[in-house]
Image (tube, rainbow, N blue to C red; front, side, top):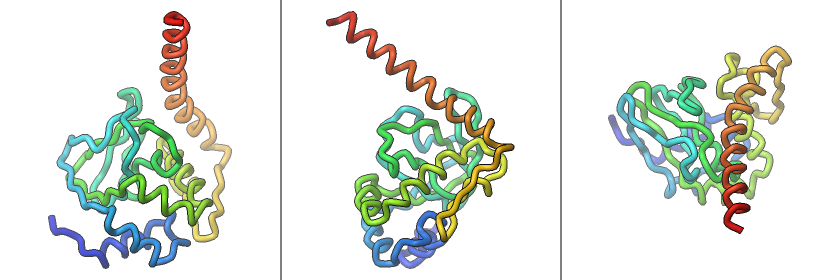
Length: 184
């Protein structure tokens, strides 16, 4: 696989819907923190509950998303690891290359710093993360005017996915709280 040049990377960034309203100068400031990464079939990109410190943009390939070892979705475009952009400390799912995949990886600190200039983009990253498991990806898709809608027909899928992520986190939190009480 060939290595992307800075101008090609900027072109990919400008095409990402979340970055529509970002200035080219701000996107260019990300370049030192961006790395091109290639993954083979079955190679893990990040694991569920690992520290969320990197944001990824799919350049080519497919990524299989699982939560609690259950299939959630296959992503062929857009971002992965949005947890970094919304200040979630851990990844809520696992991402694995389902075919040869090329990604751009962004250092979490650089993304956090950039987002201070674009506070509304955190909502866009939240919606990007929530699109997982929803069949009609157009329902939750950032647009140039930042308008989003969630159709009622897909709301049950959204709630199911949300609970599949939150219940294990709440259970782990409850276990940690109980163990603190026992020790105290």
